[in-house]
Image 1 (cartoon, rainbow, N blue to C red):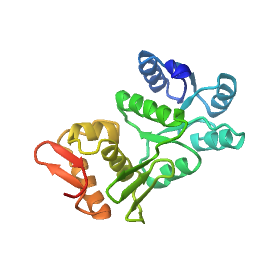
Image 2 (image 1 turned 90 degrees about the horizontal axis):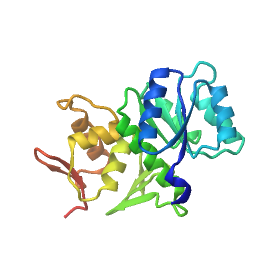
Image 3 (image 1 turned 60 degrees about the vertical axis):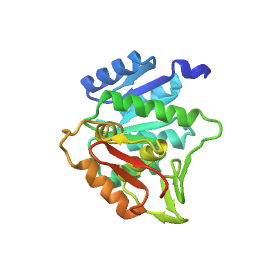
Length: 227
C-alpha cells in the first residue's frame, strides 16, 4: 500500500472537543492527523500538508464546509472529503456530494463509524480502477455517481437509503444485525429499540422491490438474489 500505511488526514472543526476526539481516534488507528478550526485555515493546511483525506465540518465560523470544498475543487484539489453535518437533510447532503464530497457523517456520530468511513473512502480513492458499481441480480449501485438502477431503470433514493443499500450490497448474502446496520449506516447509536432500521428497510423494499432484502427473524437482514 505504500503511502497508505500512515495516511495523512486533515480534520476541520471549530469545536475543540470534537476536533480532539476525532484526532485521538484517528491517531490511535495509525493515521497522521493535522487539524484546523476555520475554513481559511483548512484551505491553507490542505495546500501545505497535502492530506490524503479531509474530514470537514459543514458549520464553520467563516466559510462553510461546502464553500471550502468548492474552493479546493476549483483549484484542482481532488482530495477526498467527508463532511460532518448536524443536519441530515437530503438537500444539504446532495449539495455536499455534488460539490465533490465523498461521504458525510451526521452529528452526533460514533468515532468507530467515522474511522470506518475514513478507511472506506481512502480504499475507494486508492484503487487505480475503482470497483464502484455493485451488482446483485438486475440491481446496480454506482458509488461514484450515487445512482441506483434496477433492470436499467434509475431509482431515486435518499442519502440514508442509498447508504443502507450500499452497505447491504457490500455484504451480499450475509445476515447483518440491526446493531451492525445502525453503527455502519447511521454512524451513531440509536437506542436498540429504535425502529429506524425497519423503517428504512421498508422504504427500500418499496423502491427496489420486495424480493431482494430478506428478513432473518430476530437477527437482521440480508441482500441476496431472488431464489
